[in-house]
Length: 197
Image (cartoon, rainbow, N blue to C red; front, side):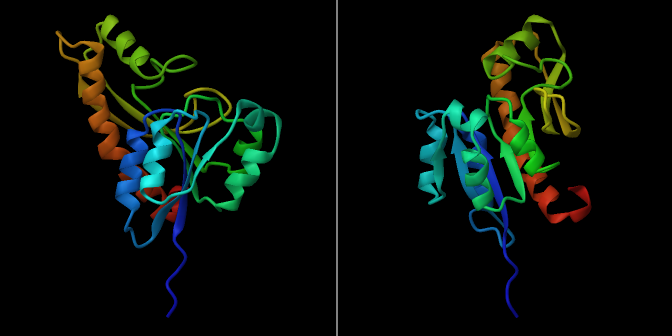
């Protein structure tokens, strides 16, 4: 009996790529799912090196290629993705990708949306805003991607405390633990439970 084809994940990352790393690790020997490719808009992104370490194709693209041509869409289609995961990817996804992969693009955001989302709300900016506002809790939101920053349907929210003496960096470390724990599990669940996608 032939083994069924594995389901394909395509990752988009702009920076260090620690969430990409978790996905690469989690699915390296998975019987049903694999990371098929990693795309980045940043030639200095460490995420590209992480992909190469796992022998996963790493592709770089420019703003012009992303927004004003079909090149990135065609490259993504070549990997036949069942799910596209934005893991620290900072650009708004263009319409052509959204239309080609409806409900198949997800993002992880390091705060409890709808608060602390939107343009410019990424990385340490998010945690600084949460600490400054005196919030008692923060966390992560994994959500579907649509035409607006951080406005898609929620898939999962997980919480952690914000301690009175927290610096943005300390809060960031606590939130990152949640990201690393839950992102691979949500991706796995979405791909293996047909009714969820």
